Amino acid sequence: MSKRLTLEFVSREFKRGGCTLLATHYTSNSVKMPYICKCGNRSEISYSKFKHGRRCYSCRNQKLADLFRHDFNYVQEYFTKQGCQLLATEYTNSKIPLSYICKCGNRDTVRFNNFKNNGARCRKCKIEKISKARRLNSSMVKRFYKLQGCILIDEYKNARKPLAFMCNCGEPSKTPFHHFKKGVRCKNCGVIRTVNAKKQYDLFIVQELFRIDECILLANEYINTKTHMEYVCKCGKQAKINLENFLKGRRCAGCSGKRAWKTRRIHDQLMETADIEFLSKAIKERIAEIET
Image (cartoon, one colour):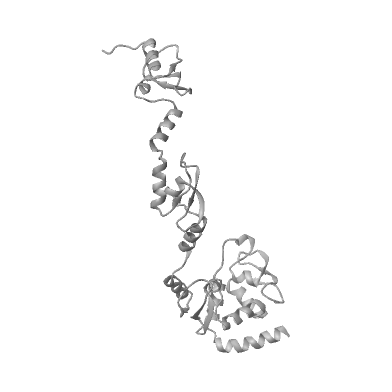
């Protein structure tokens, strides 16, 4: 049977470790006792943990910092291996910014923690890294044109260089990729879109579009796609809406979020099957009438 420890014995052990035990009685080696650590910090610890070398949190953190801290020579050598030149003459810790010359020749500051673990470099290299990650390749752009029903003819260089392509209507055209992404197509498609924005429909067609989606148009006059008109929604509620929003699938407040794509789909099918050459001539004449 092991001998029971006394308070005097435990107190001497704390003193031998450079600490001062503040407890007035000793119960067991697993019970925490107040003490003053050798660093001057006041804390609590059991004798079992103290005996195995444990101390307060401050000492623990310092011990870990000493264990993982790099010396100046290691940091300087690491910068050199990465193609950079360290200008700082001393190293304290990984959180303090260090001045250096980047491999691109630009002078900047960086924390060693970010330089080593996150690959951080100067602002110029950061911008280049981001732009490289976002830059599209030719195959990706070709695939995008194909998904839009078009065929890319030119080789893709960047988003601002005009690219020749065959439009989904069959007309050849040329426009930068960042314009194409926004919906720009050939001249004929642009003319059709212009008419859509001005006045393409009459009252009868608009009434039919509402009827297709089980709504009733109450307005007796159609002006343009932006003008609000009274109607009875298929849910039975009376509301106001313009044709542009109606074709996008929007309905009354009660049907908010329940977009109706049937009308939009029928409208798109009509446009796809239309004779583009015939429409182009007729549309140009119609635009001339509208503008005069």
